[in-house]
Image (tube, rainbow, N blue to C red; front, side, top):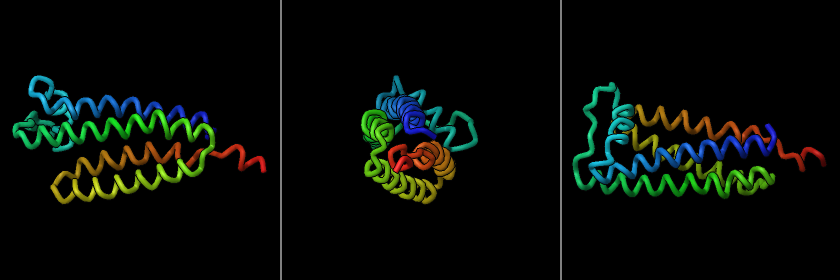
Length: 144
């Protein structure tokens, strides 16, 4: 995969992720929590409409995690994807390390909390990120 193709793929993932992050953050305010309730219901299978955000603490954690996920997504679009297009190996490697740190902590916590569905979604997201980050061919290194 060319660096430019990998970069475009990462940007697409980043932009879609920003949308998910806004849905997560939107759960902090009851009038905008419907989208997140649906997404959370998908993680807490079966899809039965039972998942709702009700406590103040959960709304606060949704606001915080939505903000963190949005900032990660913006970094993916504005820092990591352009660095991959330039062939910057240090940033590509650092992004891989950060992704694995997120994956193992988030998935282990999800499993410990009884939400295997979130660990499954994490695995899909991990694979989507790994494809462009691992399959990108550094054009400069290949020429030497």
